[in-house]
Image (tube, rainbow, N blue to C red; front, top):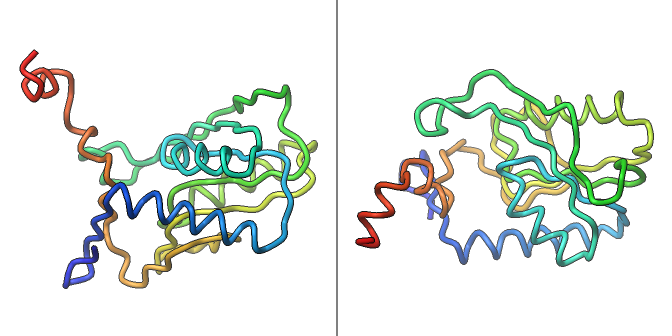
Length: 174
């Protein structure tokens, strides 16, 4: 649900999963065939997992991080892992890069550049996200929702960012 001022988008688990399913439909209807899904941890892990199941393709993982401060709400220095975890040796062929959103677009742009220059076995590379913000300087190949007002997206699992084990113990009275 988008707030009236357009500054916050609150997404339930049901909405989140529906958006991933709509992303899968867009990818399928494009007719593009790919060999592997490469998700960016952490935001792309949930969509990557679901897409991997739907398309019955192996899931590779690359860790990136740029949102660390203020419980993950302030963008900082971009860190990109040097290695990709994949179940089939080296990542190769046609690869679908998956993340949750194109915010500024910096992460997706940097990762795609790195993959194109540093991973020669990749023959074709496309990107997929749930949301693309109006401020993004990068346009993914596949996206479900375009957000011109650039809201902060409150994903259904973000409560865990500030929970900690003590709060869980309190919640469950263990």
